Every structure is written in structure tokens, then in C-alpha cells.
Image (cartoon, rainbow, N blue to C red; front, side, top):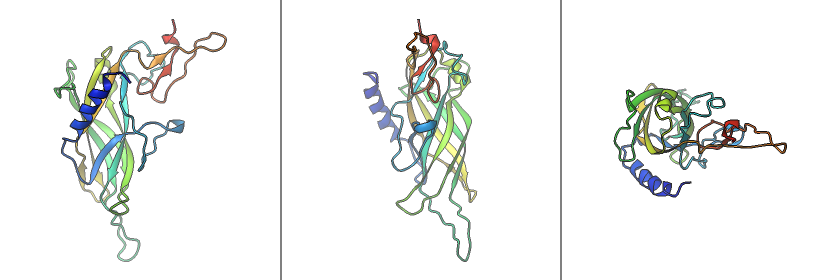
Length: 228
């Protein structure tokens, strides 16, 4: 982690607590990948401490998804499961289905990010199922997948470095047809140019590709293009 990241991260985490929240449903963090590139939402998750996006345009051959940041958010649902299997039978009305996300890209000073002709605030489809809470201590948790920086926005960020902030709210509907919106989650993203691609060679001196789960974000990939 870069030396200056610590102070930025502390500031941004403090800011995150200032946003109004939905006491029933909220974003808890960005889930990191486990084995087989899976995410595991739960009471003891692995969160990405500082999301990172490599904005280099050089690695398009291995970066088939384009320059984009896809987040798997852990979402908590505190609404109680009110379903009944005895008489009178009733389906649970409080499971939550994520349908879309509103994203605003900002500078670290909170101002809208300059993206040329693109608006800094936009909506994208999102997905995810968040079960209801078993009781007042056993909350429901699940994952919601969001393209926080879609490829068209990644193209506008080509070659940029430094810290930005993505402010995200999720919207969706409960199984009882109640529309819910989470409070704003402020997510710092470190932009770098080439930091997530390295050269890796075999014992015979041949350059190889060894790709991370989502190439160009958070984890380092080996790519032939990174070799001299």
C-alpha cells in the first residue's frame, strides 16, 4: 500500500459514517475473493481494504472486460423473517432483491469528478439476493454485484492516477413488494497506471500470463506485455 494511502483511507472511512443510512438494509463493505474466485458474505467476511483500479491502456489483450471496476458488496438485512410455516401460513415478506445502483464518482474533496462529456452521477443495473434476519442478532447477509466503474467510464479514466471516491446507493424490492434504498456507501478507489501488471517468466525464460480473478483490479496479474 502506498505511503499516502493510509491518511486518505482514514479520512474517507470517517466520511463514510456521515452519510444517512437505512437502518434495515445497508452496505457493509467490498468483498474480496476467496478460493476459486468466489466471494463469501457472512459475519466474518474478507473485505478489500483499498480498492485499486489500473488505468493503463496497454493490457487490452488480457483485459477482455475493458477498464472497469466490478464490486461485490456485502449487504446486511436487519428486517426480520416474518414467514410462518404453521397456521396461518405466510411467506416471508422481508427478503431483499437488489435491482440497481446509483453511483457518483468524486474527487477526494467531494466534488464531482471531471469525466469529460460523461455525467459523474449515473445508474447501473445491479443484482443480489439478501435474506431477511433470523432474529435481532442474526442478520441476513448476501452479496450484490455492481459495475461501479463501467467500461465507458474506465475509458474516460485511462492513464489517470491518484485517489477518487465512488459513492454508491443500492435500490431494490423486498419479497413483500416494499421498495428499499440503502444509505450512501463511500468507497475510495486508488487509480494507478500499470501497478497491477508484472512480468513473469518460466525457468526457460518464456514470458507467461497469470491472471487475477478480475484482471486490472485489486490484485496483480502477470502479462506478457509487462515484460521488456
